Image (tube, rainbow over all chains, first blue to last red; front, side, top):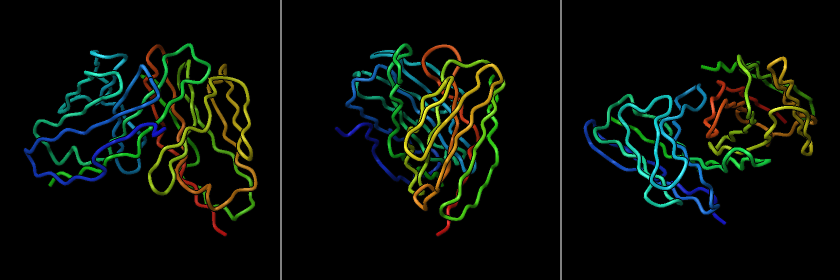
Length: 115
Length: 109
């Protein structure tokens, strides 16, 4: 049982390049999320998905796109990377509300540097 | 939106000491969780505690929802407790968490 797996773990991009971060979960969670963590701060929500084929904006969505074609996968795309997107990106998944424990589980993170 | 404030921002302990971390939030919530981010960056879910008290080994947590605060207690601290402790809350649906800035804990032998 791997939980939440993120790839890649590290990446360096040049300004203007594009890339896709991959997230996969094997816990059959309905909800999935992408957060970013900047130095000295807590995590901030970028986008989230409440089911296959659905996505919605979070607190800081600008410059990112997402897709959830399969229940177990949630992809985060950067179309034209900017230095302000240098951050650590975390994927997470959970059960819907109504469960006693939402089972919120995070991946190990992707450290992205844009130069 | 909801504001989440954690205190203290930094805490240094000797191994074996006890500590209390506080989380204040500005509105009613239906989900409150405590996470530990270890020195390698991994986030571990410690407690789901929108109200009441829970205990897990040397850690316990209490949330007083009517007064909008939560406390995380660490007893007999160990060096492996070092890292950053985050409080996160959500209001409404979809478990969209709002995080505090965290308490950075260093436990020295």
